[in-house]
Length: 492
Figure 1 (cartoon, rainbow, N blue to C red):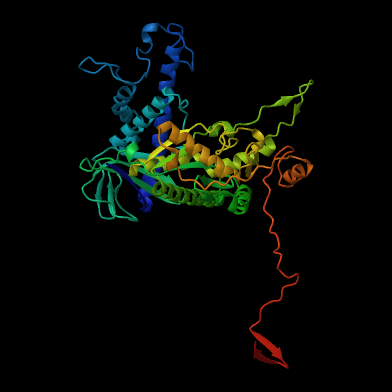
Figure 2: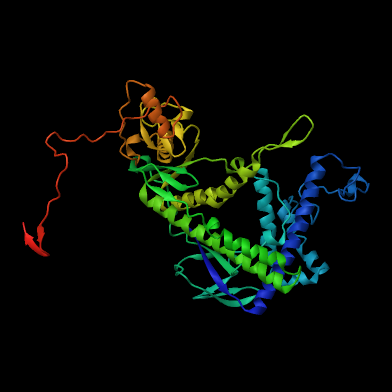
């Protein structure tokens, strides 16, 4: 079983200087090795051997001087045994020569440099899996380094980092005994340095998903903006919009930082203060999402989520031009506010947390295609775009009236249970009450539908109106316990 613990370090000034310098050197090493791998990859991708071997200078040379590996140009391509090395092994064999050419790299622990190359290896593996081309790291995007297993020592609330020394950390929760320390990552944030400790115990088995026969309940989830999560059982979890709450304070701090003299210590302090505010927003959002994830796992054995294309949802609108080539309004200024709200919701991180907690406790978590889930009636199966109007859902076929987000979550849950082959009776849902469908759709009914905000032609279920009793008096008197006469209370 593998667990992870995050703690904040108590670093002194000398240790902070060492770790800050390490980040600068490791970032330069990462970008240098990335440039090497890109050149080796581009050389083989484009058959240019014989013309030039250096894409930057484009200097002509003999093909024999070009790299014999399509992965890297650094290091030895073959081991002493004659086996061919991969890109990580080739660049790792170049580390002793790097320390000779640049002696300041000797201060960095050897396993930290190797883990830095493994980080680059993982980036290229993700690229070959279709997750995006590796990018060069800036200072804002390179804030961590890692130690290999069996390098770090842990004693109580103290931790020993090789080549840095002992330091204390805030032990917010006890780390269980019997676990072996795996990868340890040191990360710099706006409010200090943090450490992530991965521990593993082979004696404790990893939780396995429950069998389909053991499943008792399931829940469908619809993700939104105003309501962050809508469950099929009718529960609605609001979206606190942490970034919007602190937007005014953030604007003030941004304005103050921009007015400082460029490069001055006051400007650095102002931007550090701004970064701490951003970190506070992230911490609030992370804590709220973890609580939601644990609540959902306790609620049901099967959790069905929407497989949303978030990158496509926040994509910019296409530019529109008239006959003269002048750009026309395409609605991007209005969509920018929507994109900001979608990013504040952080649906991707919430989904990852739900999947992580579900895997930890053995629950089943799956994603389904959300197509037509907000337009389909869960009672009769009728699909029509006009069924939904903002946050209301009114089926034009059977007259079923419900909350639109809850209705969508029910459809998501039905899709998921159908995929697993589980009975829909195990889905947690609101008791559905179908409103009676009017037999006539005259002008009066159409006007009533418009008053609810639905388009013309929509049928609205007739709401029951209380009818007065025949024996009920026209002006009923209020019952009294006391009667006041001349300022004194007399019992009735």
